Length: 455
Image 1: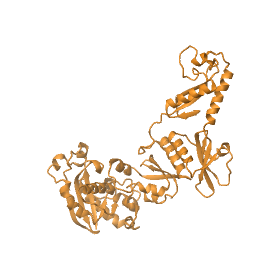
Image 2: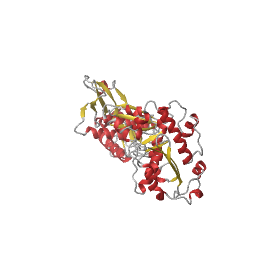
Image 3: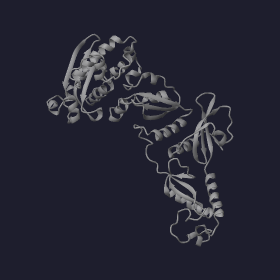
Image 4: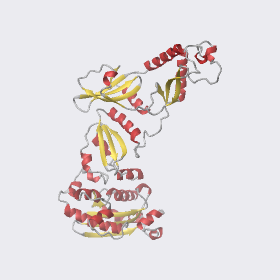
């Protein structure tokens, strides 16, 4: 027995909105055997744009019963039926949420006439209820009213039953069928073909644009986890409605998936990724030669696509490290931008600066000490590779940290011995780094299971 349902609401998600109208047609596979239709007092104002869409006004529902007075009857109609609706998760989430608020736990098998329409009658230009009914010459009386749309859905479902030569409906009702929980616009074949490997997955909208990037130890399990549960919040419901396709990239290890996820979030800036989209105000050491030929060390905000000598999160960290370099290598604080003004620098008076700020020391001598400071700084930063599983038995994965900086990652044949970073780079893809990636790699490198090779 089927319960073919349509509702009207005050908004698009159940957690902060309410139902204004419910229509339920109980259908036995041959005919409608029971009809239920009522306006519902939502106990909140109906937004004007919703009033103009549905024609349901605050005045119309003022004397209607509240859902608390209808919950028992609605639950009695639904709980032992197969719940059928156009974009079923919308109607189901509202009714399940409202029933739960009044002590009823709704658990039904579901059928979505959007998904079934795509499968049984492929190739139509649109599968919205209005367009689908126009394509199939199904009359719709009172569009955007619960009774009118539910009656049209009954006609549509009858037609789908008649044309279902491949048993799509029976397949959707099988235990464990993805049709029960997948978003309405996502082909189940794309979910079924997902591998159980580590990797990165991409959710695309109707135009093919990436709207979410995620990483997984097991791509199949992780993607499926997005569609389980019954969160009725606006963000989740909108997210599910906008998933039309999935693509993915397999990685050798979960760490590589985490790194690639971070890179792709920064590159694509997907609308539904909220983590890792904050701006990182990192700083770095930069060097340049001034008009007089002296090498300058400067602290600046890290620029996109720049290549700083060293990076740090807080400006105070950079100042502390730069002062240490000045003391250790007799550098001039004026040429390092730590002292302003036109007079002699303080270390010159203390004989720890050799006069570069007043051009008393030749640029070549001063520059040698700057280069020594740079070399010392880079020597303090470790170079190593993290080896791991490849995407197949014939390869191994490799992540390269060079002088404290993430260079990139990739795959090399399993029989290739690692001898140095230059040899590895032919096999690796270079990626931009960020603080999140650096922390991931450092944390992994200190773990007991890490296959770490110092360089």
